[in-house]
Length: 389
Image (cartoon, rainbow, N blue to C red; front, side):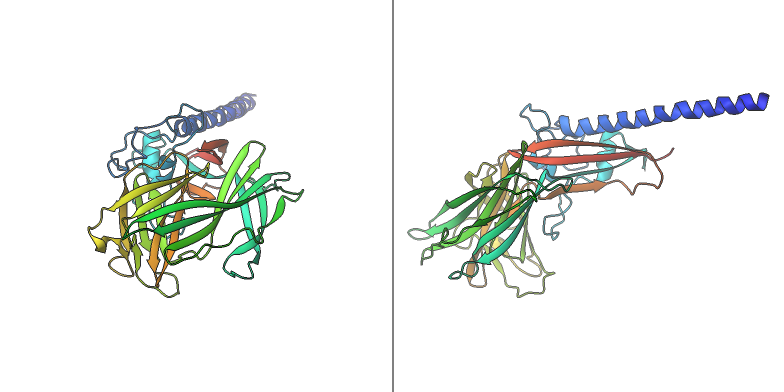
């Protein structure tokens, strides 16, 4: 009889304690999630990463200063991206996952009390497929198929897709003076079918403007809207694949990609004038932002090549706006001009950080939230678990 009573009591304790543990896990997950998404941390930890290193950071939060709930600062988000979109640049301003754990109380005394995975991606994924190129200008696509899916892989039927052909132009004036144009050539709108795709035909809509003093670089900006969500992607043509860019705060990092098995020659940034970073916001406004080389001075500081000069850092005169989407520069290589660019944040996957792998059979708490950066929507998901049960 005594043995039965003890067994019964022990069983009841185990049954009652398990929901308490799970409830505590949810509470910790929510506190951690809210800390990152609703608080700002130090005012300049995103905008001035050179002066606020990971070791000097004494608080963390991704929110911007707009006062709007779940509106994030793109410069802070970029410090959670370990690599550039091309994977060729290791972000020198990256905040290691252990430091995030220390600042939030998940990592103490050299070990994890709670493990986590946190990632952010575009709320809508826009897949672009080129169906046909221009017969006269074979490097210019003109018929596209756009497929829109949600962050969880669902086909987005009746999504509004807007595709706009734009062109960056560099126009030489008298002497070594240059002006920049950001021209909209044509915009098409359509709604996706029940399978989540639509086709748009730009035949005859874009004719590249060429001349002795004009360099033109066409590209396509695609915006998808679906039940209050908005995401964007950009497609360029004849992209310079040997140059990788990463923009964090006021610093543009350029790196020569030596891994590609293609012809390589030196790249000259701002060959004919001072280096100017061209920024496009999510509402498609063009901004010009002068930059200076902080790794060396003079004309040599504009050269990037294979070997000893394969990495340059440029400081922008102005902090990019919070709704920035694309930033790029003109580059001379192999006897012609190119346009190299990077997105802010990196799309479609902006960051994916994880303390460790999830132990088998362990309880986890998962939270998710739609956030905004500028006019665009992103999906953030957190999975958290207790390291010792």
